[in-house]
Image 1: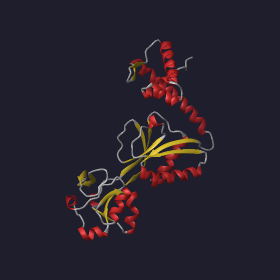
Image 2: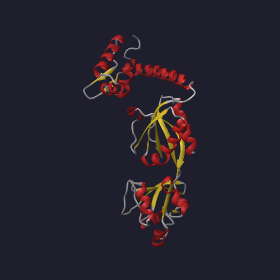
Image 3: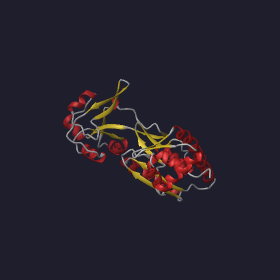
Image 4: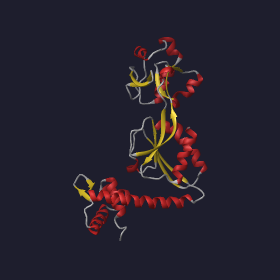
Length: 288
């Protein structure tokens, strides 16, 4: 009897919805409601404030949730301890990553990882949206640049460098900018932002740029730069091979912004299972 309704209570508390909790548990909303009502009756206290639009915890509910969450985390840890005794990691891994970086860097590494551990199943969704990991049931996400979500745990996997570059054809026609102020006289190839990121005199700054072409595609911007249509600022994984071949030339190197982090993030209060920790460590080793 002591366990009845506990899991339903935690799911409702974390999703702030009886309907969402029932979907996550694959049971009916009525069953969730019955279990919560019985739990409140057994405890002789009200755990939730219920309105037609929102479900929220009472003060007693918040205290009870903290203890219940600790208990369930302990059960998860016990299960992971048993899994850890197995000779090979196994089970499902659900992750998300940015589209281009995921295609070029993450998924090839995940494929190599899958070759080593054939009992692991991977479900990866590539999107440039910052998805809710808890709501989506994701084990981890790959994020680039500055992290803003303080509710997540993070492990740094590596770093990326942003380059400003142009083709020799563009430089022959328009010359080279030698300072940030000179960018206003050049044709810039725009992405989703109106500014580029730099560092000058030890301080980071954003410089607004202008141009005739604006794409939400890094590959489209690279192609435009290769064809001499303008100057571009892009991460290394778009332009590195072109810089090495000489088809693109790096500009304004003295003003280059600090490298940005590549991160694996996962929900707080969730210990990484062996299979997830193994994958994160593998990605960190390869991307370092």
